[in-house]
Length: 223
Image (cartoon, rainbow, N blue to C red; front, side, top):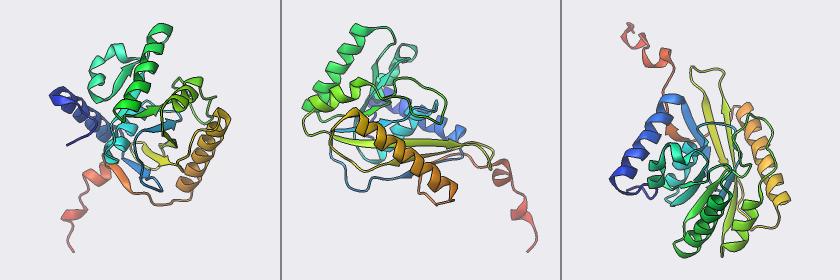
């Protein structure tokens, strides 16, 4: 049973996320936490790819955590509420404040975690834009919260479909936004280097192989 999906509708939305990930990527790889994580946790991430939210869905499912996710385009698909999505519409200052207050309450009272794309907007790589103040606000208001710098990296080169990697860095207590910025930037640099060095990563979610892998005739060749 998934900790991230709510009811039958949540099960359907979760299935859509898994199918979408499987069809769009060759594989999703991960570097798991160095130590067990206990809720509440803030996974603060860079935001360089359309699939970022789906990737974090797979992360929290694997870790058996229930997590919230602030979604700017929530109104386009409100059923994301059944998998932790919360409305965070651009330009709606009052609505965003309401979402932040509800997030803090749920993290304190029900031990929800939070996947937070703290740059605030989806943008092209490679840089990480300044992290927003909402990260500090939640971190300071949630008792016993653990922060995890979470780097996401995509590469489309030697395979038919892109590959994606997600790396969970060393967990820590909040000290400052600048500290979080430095930790996240460092985690992304290390992840890129590990991928560039052809390091092997465990598969978090299987995708779709290349056409030559899916339709290879080699299995019919005489031995």
